[in-house]
Length: 219
Ligand SMILES: [Zn+2]
Ligand SMILES: [Zn+2]
Image (cartoon, rainbow, N blue to C red; front, top):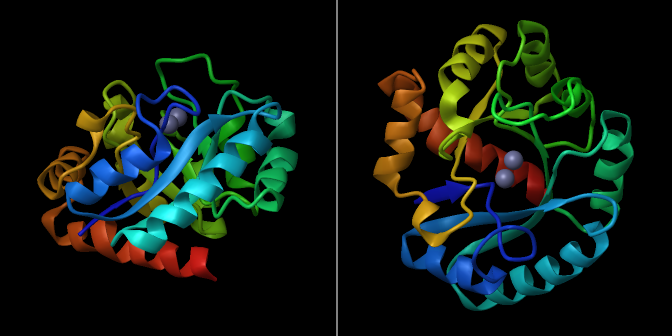
């Protein structure tokens, strides 16, 4: 069973429609996929309207759970809390924040603002996360992402090292933009091992944490 809480469709910069992405995921053995397109204040409402409709349809007819979410991306730090709340009001079941990767000029302070926000579920690709930020993730029950995406994955090892000391919890996500980016069980395992997680930690990160997040989402 594959769980993946971060993906993109052509509603932002992904290649496929929401229903086709879910279809492709289902055919690869996924049990759960969250659709988390890039949003800011302008497209938040429209993206959620379309994602909610498509997720409801495919979850009803196919044996896969499609979760409507968003990834707040490159929004001003000062606006993260209000936009995360707006995403919830708009029906997002999962709120992901695009963290401070080392390959982009994400506004400094994004990681911290995300980790202090009660509406945030996942901090994606948090780059050179600090011990203080990792402690906030643990305290506020926000998952840190181990990324399967080239580039964003450069700091996976650092994220595991700092997050583990703080007691933070991890998820392996694809951040898929194209069908070839979707996870397989083997690739998810290898991304986790490559990030420095031990074999004894795999079940928790790949199965236990996703199931716990699902319980929170179903709430
Ligand atoms: Zn991102
Ligand atoms: Zn993304």
